[in-house]
Image (cartoon, rainbow, N blue to C red; front, side, top):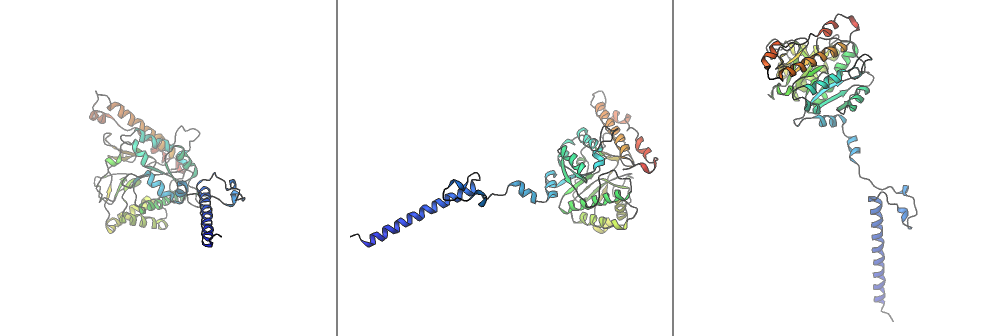
Amino acid sequence: MDDPKKIKCSLSFGSNLALIFLFLMGTTILYLSIWSPSYSLTNFPFFPFQREQLQPCQLPNSTAVEARQDKLELALAKASMENKTVIIAVVNRAYVDQDVKADTTMLDIFLDSFWLGEDTKKLVDHLLLVAVDQTAYDRCRFLRLNCFRLETDGVDFGGEKTFMSQDFIKMMWRRTLFLLEILKRGYSFIFTDMDVMWLRNPFERLSKNETEDLQISTDLFFGDPWKEDQFINTGFYYIRSNIKTIALFGKWYSMRDNSTGQKEQDVLRGLIKGGIIGRLGLNVRCLDTLYFSGFCQDSKDFRAVTTVHANCCKSITAKVTDLRAVLRDWKRFKEITSHKQFTIVNATETFRWTGHWRCWNSWSTGNKTKV
């Protein structure tokens, strides 16, 4: 007769083997169902249910993670230099669409200047184009630039805006609010209008003194960069992100509803004349037109000029025509000075900018001209 204890032990051992077998099988099936999406549990005769009843677990991919992140932050981080500095330009359909009679656009000319300028090609990597309509955004993406789509509910910023019209003023204020947001995110930036030609790297000419909060271009320069009563121009400036500049832009934007008949540039000039620089403890440098020039006041020295702005001009068509002349002048200067028999000094003494005739005449064509 068998020993009952041995029988009990044998049964217990057999039960344990069965449990171990089931555990291993279950673990294997679970592993396959989770980590092998192509594997179907219907391969097991023990599990007759369909695949749709037990979906495999999938780890989130990088695209899904990025989609949940802030799109603006991603765009800024991509374009940023190591010191969190970017170059910002705002573009709409009027700057990217070609007229039937045109063979270029404002955007094309703007980018040409980076190609033709000295030490400027590399800066395109740090340029963020802010598109205020879908056409401009599509064009930016087509050119494989750094692009961000700025959307404003209920407002169409796509077309060409008449100078000082309500749509023009709204677009300028929307731009100011957007730039305030960039400062709040800790990014310093150069803001540039698209009608500014970059002939040399402006970072080589701008002050590297970190105590200078804002360096801003002028229509006319009278010799004192610290004088507060200047004809500033918000078409080109370099601003550092800090508490003071954020406060300045916040105050500036808050004035939008109390500035009837004024564009945002006029409001900022009024704030500066009213003493806001001293109240906020700001250091603001006005830029010399010898280096950061424009159609209001040409640079007298081709050896020094860094940017050329089509200011004092009312029409996009006129800007395009006269800016093309600027680039032709620049190419001729570079060609002449590349020959050994010509010295840079002699070339500069005899070289002059082509007259900005289309822009000068744009002011006498009535209300049909636009900007």
